[in-house]
Image (cartoon, rainbow, N blue to C red; front, side, top):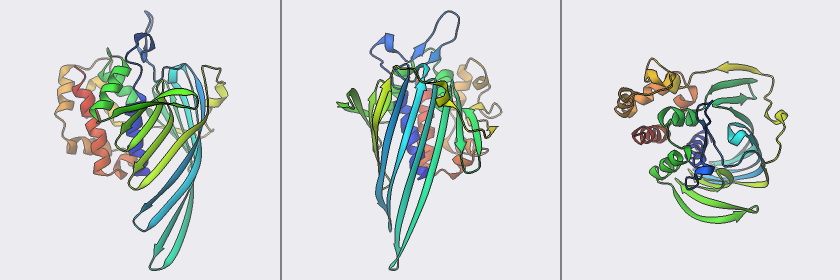
Length: 299
């Protein structure tokens, strides 16, 4: 399930950055004379969405079923967001006539706070803090471009297509399809998704959605666990261009990234990242291709 989640997360990065590129007043950036450009993730100021999820499918000799609930709180156009998910998955396996049932429970919580990402590990009672990859890449590599334009180009460059529109839960949604994942999006917010990956079908649907209302600060509280800060590969100034730690990226830095082979990039990102070490080459190539696409589209 980790591999599926990583692929879905990559697709969500592309889809979630897509704003209303046809309407400058609804663009995914805010800027005034006293502050630098701040990316908007959604075209909605705030929201509370609750979801139900179902999981089903077969992998080799195993049948997998599951269900779960999710809640998303956000404000400041998505700059501050907390997402919580609880699910139960049952795997039924028949080996040489013997049936084995295994049920696992999962509890996840992530928080995005103006570019800082917090991932809660409930099992070990710790919180991992690091820069959010999607937001950092857009801010660093495309400082003068609208995030909606970048996200749409990135999505289409990866083969994504808008395949229609549909009213869901009373909201007019765009339907986007990318690599086996369909998402119903309302102003950048996903209200429904259907993923068919590696033989597993995952359907997530919003059961309620309230937008542009007051969202209490208490909804963004994290558990009182120890926070460990980890540098992502984009922060590694020794191996990546120095300008990733500054406000500018020069052409020499861009050239270094353009010329970085997959194997060089793989060695770099797996050096200090346990999750990257567990990822397959296929998953890593998806991420590498996305980064290369964004770098080459910068100019």
